[in-house]
Image 1 (spheres, rainbow, N blue to C red):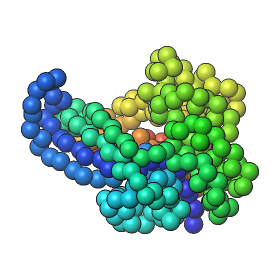
Image 2 (image 1 turned 180 degrees about the horizontal axis):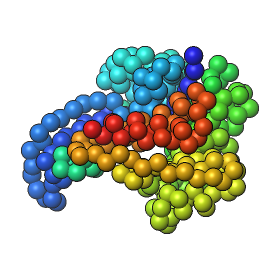
Image 3 (image 1 turned 180 degrees about the vertical axis):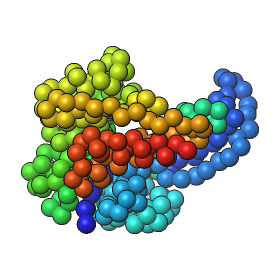
Amino acid sequence: MTRIMCVGVATLDVVNTVARYPDEDSEVRASQQALRMGGNAANTAVVLAQMGDTVSWVGNLAPSCAVIDASFAAHAVDTSLATRLSKGVTPTSYITLSAATGSRSIVHYRDLPEYAADSFLQLDLRAFDWIHFEGRAIDELGAMLTHARTQSVARLSLEVEKPRPGIESLFPHVDLLMFSRDYAQAKNQPSANALLQSLPPGTRASCTWGADGAWAIDCDGQKQHVAAPRLEVIADTVGAGDAFNAALVHALHQGDTLFDALATAVALASRTCT
């Protein structure tokens, strides 16, 4: 059975559903409210577990994190390698979800240190087949990637959601890059195809583009686009990108080609929006 590690953040998500996104300085009533676990690496870990993989999530946990503990436990995601801190509070995302469009706007608050490389360097990684990293805390992440590469034979993937300073220095150290539209646009790339074309030869990568689906490029420079199915109603886009990443990792490790895995990932991400 595949054993996968996801390294990153787990958050508490407070999701308020409204008829449409409110105007500035207005007051609206939420039709629904949900309290659930979020965070890119945490969501990806849960989806991988649902797909039958044995998954460990690694990151920092606040002293009080009952919702997160319960969610991981409910999906059999191992957290024994995580670091439980004595101070701080669980990072919290306040998400406004528009029923009209399915879009989500997020206000994030955190009072918890980023996961430290010193903690990761203490871990025995030899049992893992794949290690997936959320692209944050770049200085710490560089040391983690070096440790992972030297201690294990696991394949390494890196989610590149935001244009964090210095993140490009990490690209040569992983086997798969997972880009977002936000990153591409921040780098003045007009399309996923343009971003992938700008990467150094030999790079293996994907780039999601919302309702337009996703693109991928293999080590030989061949590119493929998979369109997202047209959805009559988009209920909730929260976590769709994390589900895409999970499906891509799962399919690749099962032996699928990059382009077959891309199709699987687009299909799963689309289903999470309904």
